[in-house]
Length: 256
Length: 300
Image (cartoon, rainbow over all chains, first blue to last red):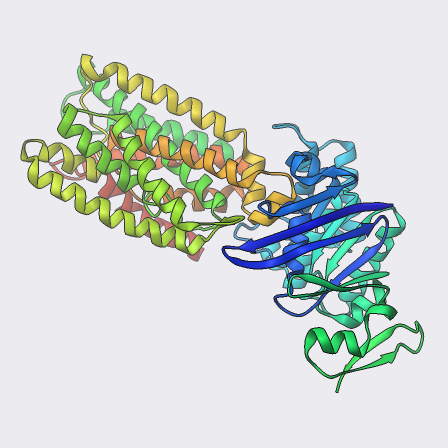
């Protein structure tokens, strides 16, 4: 089932066109990776689906409903968004930030209920942050902070989770942890879409890839269909060699 | 314990401001001092409360009514009001604050958010412009020079007359209602302080919400400046002190900011009336006392 559908979407920052007449669909319970060179429009596409950028042309349907017609709070119950970077200016505790994920479900002056506390607890556990829960956010490393934001999005309990380069600040172990978490979420009926620069990680974990170039979709399909020397050479303008992962038999990229 | 101490300090500040000062204690003096105390609580509380909200809203610890230009705009509007109406004019002050605020906001706005550095820059630029215009007004309207000087330096001793009593009471009551209204958004302020994209992702219509909050805080600043003048420093520093003492959550530190702002301004008023034979402008005292205290707290 298509959980997200984009029809002829165009978007421009001032006069420069970033997304050009783009149409595509995203299937339910899949981990989809959006890849492509800098300036291809990956993050812009994610921000359009997440409701961050609203002045686009065309149509975006979320579970058959027009995104522009969905009220922000209702949208937040369906879609969780993890931005590329979060600059914290105030020193909240980790658990307070994760609890912010329950905002769409709370009325003013109403404290967290049982369901909310459970969602926060699960999100902390899922991202291995339980021991950090009382720590001030500014005392954490960039990678740990990124996990906190992911935990907050999980506490939202959305059906769709959008992440813009979620592993960019993480070490190997936490890259693996986060990608495993995201993969597991798809088994719980969550649709996960990530923008990724790491082609190897995207190839290893994503079941579907969307290769973007100059605001359009250049190709889409399984990693084996997309990660080919021709596709990557045409899009990245770089000579690339492909080898296959010895265990998972998935294409991996080597620079020549 | 900290909450308890703040409440004790609040009452101590009120009592000190009532009893301290030269001259024999009499009923008229008590009346004057009570009106100063009400204005002190009103102005100190609102400046700190608004500063706290604006710092969170724009994710910038340097933001306050002064750095955003609204206080200077309000001072310009209030000066024009003094020339035209001869007394406190909250609507003129609000119009000045709103115009300068709108200028700053439009310069900093981009699709999906605000450029925070540009916000401060535009605020500083508009402050300079407003200050120059106020000086032109001072040169042209020499009769009202004294009133405008006190407006620029901050003064809690506004003389309440039968003509201005109603406008002062209505301004103060309206301001308290707006403070309570803004407080109900404590959760939104928490979330927005972690970034615009995070807030939109959590279902907050950041653009409209920011506009609403910006308009209300601008109105509040306009009201404060029209009654007690432009008192600097309170809106910048008290929110920081409040966060150091009560943490970053707006549920706790917004009421704390209000009380600490009021306490700070009442003590500053006591000092301004008792330190020398002549009464010092309270804005001068807030900076003189506040700066070393702030540095001490941060070093600690």
